[in-house]
Amino acid sequence: MAALLSWLQLRSQGGAFVLRMEDVDTGRSRQHFADSIVHDLTWLGLDWDEGPDAGGHAGPYVQSQRLELYREALDKLQAQGLLYSCYCSRADILAAPSAPHGLSAEGPLYPGTCRHLSQSEQQLKARTKTPSLRFKVKERFPGFQDDILGPIEINGYASSDFVVRRADGIYAYQLAVVVDDAAMGITDVFRGADLLDSTPRQLMLYEALELTPPRFAHFPLLLDEKGNRLAKRTQGLSIRELRQRGVSPRRIVGWLAWITGLIGSLQELSPQELIPLFSMEHVPKEPVMLTPDVLNLL
Image 1 (cartoon, rainbow, N blue to C red):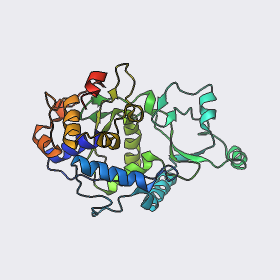
Image 2: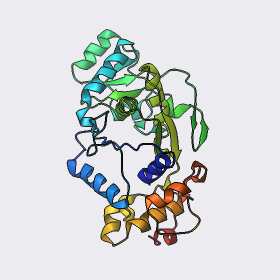
Image 3: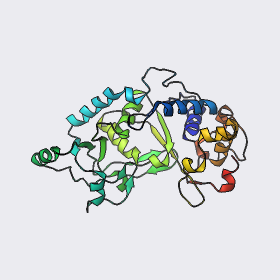
Image 4: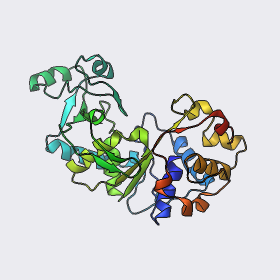
């Protein structure tokens, strides 16, 4: 759904669509996953102006081939004194009595345990553990305007220092996407509301790196009838599974447009036919509840 809505947003404005493979976490990324994404999007009728197969002025469009750019950004943040070494594990953070309540997209909110370690304390910890690098979040940071959800205030979910390079040396999502979006001239980011708490953090990085941020729009999540996030792994809703069941791409595209309010009744349509029908005003602001009857219409 994210790819379709993002594609429609850009195409309806005459914009260029960029496909980027975010495989910076090399331990979890596999080439066949990337190949599957390209195949699924093409099968649905989506295309792109720049990408791994299409080329473009800002390539490469594969994050694992852009590591030098992330290192340069990290050096710039380090030179400003905006980073510090963190020796805490996830278990340490969860067990900390001063830990803020709640979870972010990256996991538990960080209480700042290592932010004020002395040099001798850091040296002692470094004997037994390789640290991650965390970005120092400001005490106060302005909110932002979301193109779907409206004004967003910055509060607890974005107030804790976050990782920009993991202990295993892998650059964090937050840093990589900021560097890439700026380098690729991205003007509009359209993604799910599960990434809403990433946006303030990315805006902080844009400011620190003196880069121009894009506009952000976050669409609500799809939920089952019990209010739980719809899991494609358990609902048989992956493009591959639907294709194997014989569901046509026009059926899938029309169904997605219908459940998100772009069209008033279920129809079979191509992405191109939806372009003149797309409006940000039609995208729902609240989570979309999908009952078994609605799911069975696929």
